[in-house]
Image (cartoon, rainbow, N blue to C red; front, side):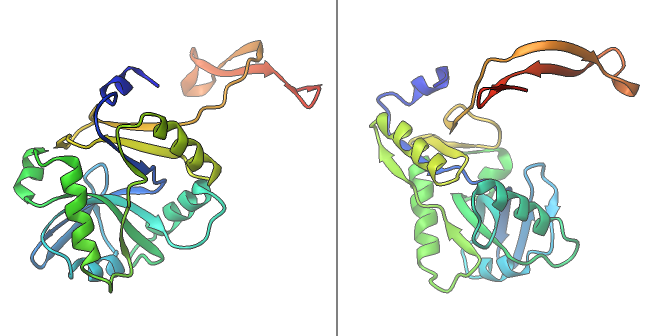
Length: 225
């Protein structure tokens, strides 16, 4: 773990599956329902999700746009999510999986909500559970809430085995900030190997004078490649 993981030690934290979708923010204020991407661009054509959102209370809903269906792993699901979400006009076969909620829209607009992360998630769960007729909006249930640091490794490995990218670690008492924060950590696996570098190749055209490629040699099943 990196140095930021020290913030988790002896503090209560929340583990959730790292969704491999497209980040989506929904701001609902009475009859006005607007969706935004991570970059703040307006996302249109989400009629199914909009109809579900009409049933929920006002506030800011934070989550991921995910393709509906059975997929062998998160990468396949992500590819299908991108395909469906980039369709011009009406978009179908998508759901909104929410993992955070800000009740006061003004807090989101100024960039900070001081309500604790666990309280925000509990409120979001309560809102969604009160509506059993939702078809395209879901709550992302935590995998674990507590202080046992070993659970991070346990659920991280489980996520990889199930074809997921990894897990997210949130401090239970952390606030919501509209920027990158050190109280929300990503845990994912990395595959490493040692290889022999045979050549360094210069780039061409606009990459002239820059690194273009690295030629390597490695062993696989007893053969050199």
